[in-house]
Image (cartoon, rainbow, N blue to C red; front, side, top):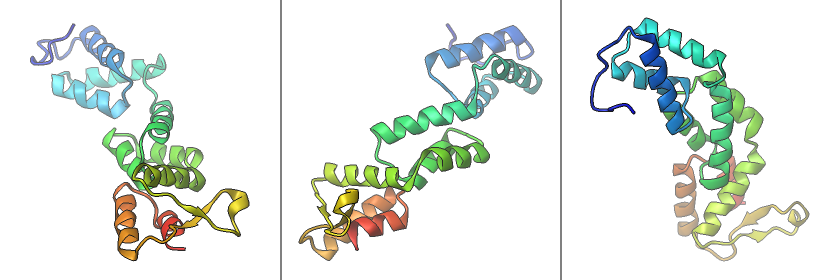
Length: 174
């Protein structure tokens, strides 16, 4: 076990750096950026950190793309965030922007984002009414009989969760 309160006494010790990194990964899946930040904070030298990260990548213990895909699936299933909200979460996990863009473009469609927005609205106690022209596609037009003030409040909630403006507009205002 590692004592998280103390800095390392061996900043050049590759085996201790590797053990620490594996320990971090045993607690939870992490991105390369997260492991880098933890190891830097622990006081390992930059050279030792780079060697350790390289070793972990070659052993497939660290892979930002796989991490991002797993993280995206969990966010879609269990959280109510839109495209920009998920992108922000990815950035907080210190994922490279090219990985973020690729994973979002491949794994997060507007249709999925719309379903998540509908799930959030349902959780808030609001139901949507299918539009007659679109009922075959199971898409929704607007709220039935709700005031404009309430729609604006819900639109702001969706916006704060990172949903794209066209998704918000299609759910609430068309």
